[in-house]
Image 1 (cartoon, rainbow, N blue to C red):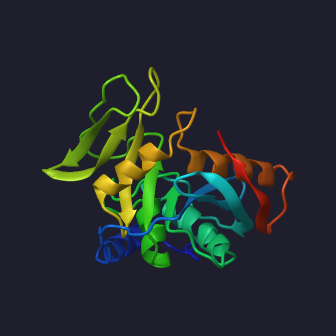
Image 2 (image 1 turned 30 degrees about the vertical axis):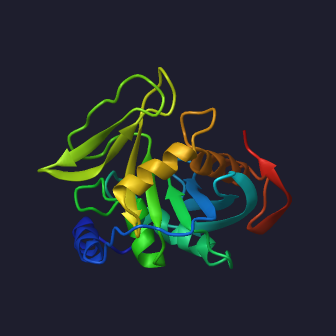
Length: 232
């Protein structure tokens, strides 16, 4: 999909996609998804997965898995060009779309407001939240060392996201609206998705399932859980 893009082409597309960003509240949230990618170093094969949980109960309902081939470089600020095509392929397997998708990466907390969560959200016309493990952009503020503490991340007076402490004595995660959701709502929802780990449950579970897919424990396709699983 993007294999022939140069970085200049990618920047131009990001700037064009950013024109379609709309940060508006989500209503009637009943399900929340987590999306993640796994790959072997120096491989062109992307293993992609999306898990869907009930909300706010956070019980696993179903998940979808698929592979995708790409040669686009792994470069900070351009991860959407590697990951979004694979995730869109998985997205097509899901008939009952979730209310919100949380992606392992940034939303508008990005130099061109087009992190992987925004990139996916604009193309899929879907409410998305970025939940990154490290800060990519903006003036970073470290929150207090207590669970649920958060601080704004801004640039030139614009709120781009939040740093959020999900556990005492652990590194924060970085939350930002991706598309079709507000910044404050993104933060509030992620707080409700915190379990016993640093990473919130939607993307934590997606990471585990996609890794099992990559090593051959799970098969591609759409899978329904007969008995919803409580995750923590």
